[in-house]
Length: 69
Ligand SMILES: [Zn+2]
Image (cartoon, rainbow, N blue to C red; front, side, top):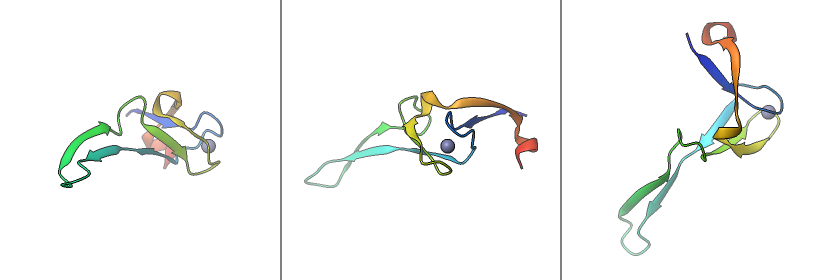
C-alpha cells in the first residue's frame, strides 16, 4: 500500500518528472546529476492537462495503488 502523487490541477496520476544530467562540453564526460527524479525541484509535467510545475507541488492521493488500476 502507498499513496500516489497526482497532478494538483486535474488530479491525474499520469505525471512525469524530468531528471537533469550534466556533461562536460568538450569531452562528453559525465559531470553530475544536477536534478534527480525524486528531488523536490524536479520538473513535473502532467500528461493529462499539460500542467507544468515541480514535484514538490504534486498532491498526495488518498487512493491506494491497487485502487488506481
Ligand atoms: Zn493534470
